[in-house]
Length: 287
Image (cartoon, rainbow, N blue to C red):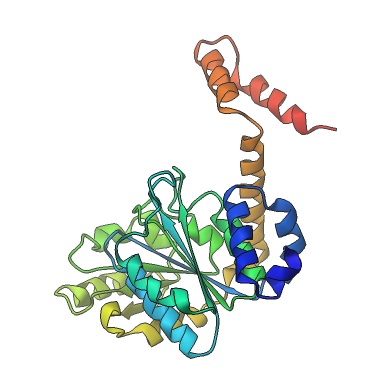
């Protein structure tokens, strides 16, 4: 399967993506990893209704017009058992399905917090190795807790809309601190100039780009600003955090929900202390 993916076989890539979502692709990803590091991993986040999907659609059109390939990971809040339909404006992205140089994968969060599915990072690794020039990750749109994308993406774009509460108070939230680029979408609305002034005044050290995504306005400027940001995912600091997160996830996978429930009950009832209990779990990794 590895060679098929490298050779551009989209069916093999889709099968591999299914393995990634099931958490069964570690050996494949380990083989593919030396081929990663070339794609621009672009995170698009912001409040629900900000027009993230429309922006992604327009960015994809612009990048494809340059002759470059694009993969899109659209993270949905819905359960995979409820039908898995694309949300809202994501229907517009369907126009790209006929394009062999655009790969779209919708992922359910399955209850994961932070705006991403648990295996989103592995999905971007797969798509990077498959040779896509740009991998766009559109987060679920959960609000201020949606900061995991900054640990994954090379460049993070935060999309705001005037008149939706995205004022100076929101600037103080954690979501605002992760932006490499701010996009004020629907900039033809009243209040767009005020929001831009507030962002500049907050001295967040990130460019502020007005767009009207549904009309394609400002898209080239967003792409230019993104490409002017040094990619974070090629730094030691980035991989230190990624490895730390991977270790955390691997550790948690070794503990069943029943065992975790039993341990929590024992600690709550003061039959056990959490310190020695955690040490016992960590001893599983001692050789």
